[in-house]
Length: 383
Image (cartoon, rainbow, N blue to C red; front, top):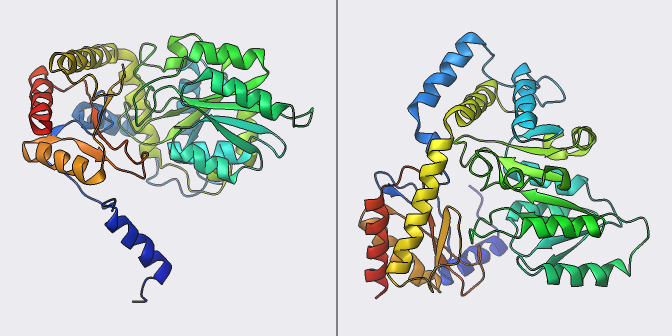
């Protein structure tokens, strides 16, 4: 086998020196405070059984057999996209293989040369990768700071062409902090300044707005140019969709390379998504309620234990304790795991150096006893 090139070996060595080496691992049998399975759908055996029953009624081939523009656009895609646009109150929906594919496909194809994109400095890596592939210029603004966005807009708009399009990009729930922007103020700002607002709803999909998303909860459907919803978190499966106008959907079908040049999701996956969404529509309010109760209980325990200053302010299922230094946060995570709790460290360079953290994901299925125990253990370990 040919040896790894020296430049690549050097980069790996740097990761080792910085205690930032990533590896593939699985932790079984621990109390889950790490996965994105917020509502417990991924572990719901009834959903697996219902998917099998669904496919008996509507038998499908095993594989997609090609891209969606060739042979892979099986009838279940139409059924799912029609459901999504109605459920999430959008004019159209277009399903992609993953949230990464959706973001890369959108940002690499929609903003054009001469356009300007303003993005929150903490947006997901998939958005950043899409921006790097775009011909438009992009500028970051301070996290959740409308004044910073306005300053960037004024500064760069004056230097640009009259026919440019302006895009503003944010997330409804930020994946590494768990906080949210003021979406109402941001939507109003975009309308006043002629900007197209794009909201990544990955960590809000299925949880807010009675099982829909944060845009729906706030009644902003008509003010958002595009929403990216994903199915690998609260929905418990895989894939994503872009919600927007019918014209936007037509454009993406023609120009989003991550849709055009990849094999489509197999029918079984799309069937599983339909079953999961039907369950969310019919029974999802109860797990959403349990999740919110557990989030409130988690935050109350943090306050009672005197750890408010350690945690980033968040009202979402993502609760993060800042513990600076890769070595230190990895050590504390290992101690929590040894005691039976699956809590993962987030290291630099994933987050800024000095802002390394333990990322707790709260779920509808976590018990109050589990929440109390893991937080008390964290306090004792940190002391």
